[in-house]
Length: 195
Image 1 (cartoon, helix red, strand yellow):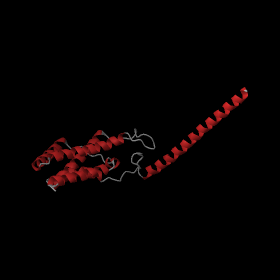
Image 2 (cartoon, one colour):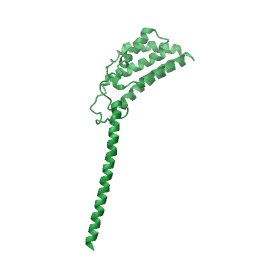
Image 3 (spheres, one colour):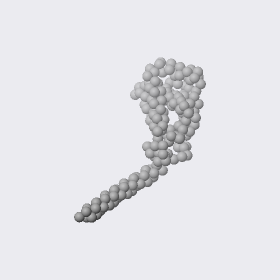
Image 4 (cartoon, helix red, strand yellow):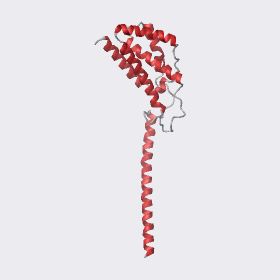
């Protein structure tokens, strides 16, 4: 396995981990958006080392895949029907908070690709914000109300709704049958009165 293959495997593992993390946990901490000049200098160093190692395309892919994973997670939660109604009143954070998480994920993905070529301090600088947010996994105190990926409480709610739907279907069916029977009886009475 070549160095590039190993770096690609590390990227795949990072993206898989990122996709398993719950956005509710990741956004518990408002990550700061890095200073643009400091980040530009950091990225210049990363890009120079990546070019020397032939990993420029892989670094670009890492940034894109991390960005896509975070944006997709936010998109999935933008319209989230729940058993309690729609989530329109629930904030997913400010644009600055979202950007902070995207940048942190991009930097951590780049670190996964480049950690064998960069010094430990630079790797720590790249990964620390994301690891800080990822360290909050499992910390949300409210149960997921989502019908898309329910937690243990969500499965109970799904079962209750399922039973309610069956009962409602039976009641509606019985009401329709009763209405049909009443209509037939009334039609029969009218017909017998006319004779």
